[in-house]
Length: 390
Image 1 (tube, rainbow, N blue to C red):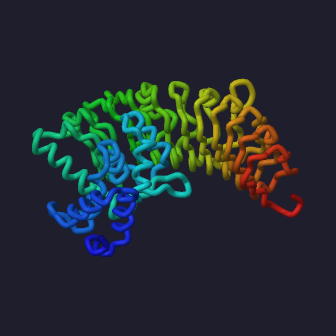
Image 2 (cartoon, rainbow, N blue to C red):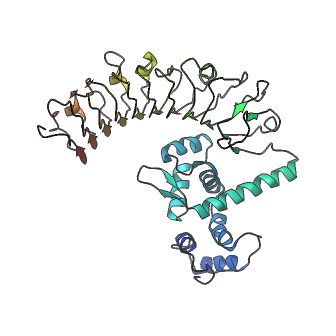
Image 3 (cartoon, rainbow, N blue to C red):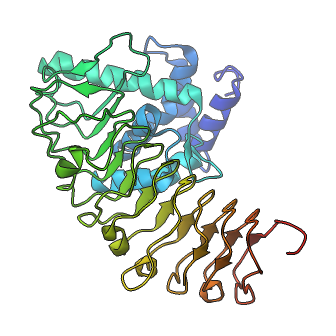
């Protein structure tokens, strides 16, 4: 077996994991596959493809999605997409993990080796090519990746041509792109849209992403008056909204139409207020507002922050609020990060957060006294490093 695998560590790990607890006959069958080089691809990809061929259809689709689109993505976010596509992600990820075809990072991100990414990209390319040969078009394409970040064109417009036939498009990455004013497709079938570097001017007049589950508009020029909000509100199933680095947002957008589970506002540097709809995100599990340097207050009172009863992770590092008002209703909160909130003087209600596992309020230099931590029986990590008097 080592000879057939060329002594390659990754190949040994992947093939070895796939043969764990298999019968002798299955070992012999795999050896035969490795010796019969049918496809004209580099040897290492031939070796790794043997494990890919042993996956079920849904597992293969999850593998290809990670290789082509989701490497580095939060695992839970990817699973929301696969659940919508009925790919049975919990079982699929478990199988890929056991076969060493994907790893889970310290921050719960999906990680795939470069050679496996090459395999997935190669398989994805030839799958698309086969569809084009058979169907004389692109009507079977489900995922498309476009990146104009380094484009030499001053106006990288996307036109309707080509997209009109992509009736099965579910995953679209079109970073730093602009759409032509006469663009026709509505993208009603999209489940995942990553549009990093989205321009300030919105030109998609027929945009109707009714099935959208995950929307990533990070590092965009959008404002609170961006016309795209009027179209996105139809996405009733939207569960993840990533607005990282949107430096022109003065307050959170209106969020009441969505059942958001994840809201990322990291590095929205001029964000100073929250829209009143923020108070009703009862399904929100993760909220990240790290680096919102002008944020001084979070909603408080009836219908305020205490309504976020599903919240498990709250990240407020480098914000400017002076007090975190009563958190006692956040009974599911497991992680609270308020590191380097240099004006923070008080955190109320910590003693009621029995689910809290990690608490970080290090370098909160204005803290007048330590909050009561006596009831935090499940806490595994508390960072209160600040200065002498604490």
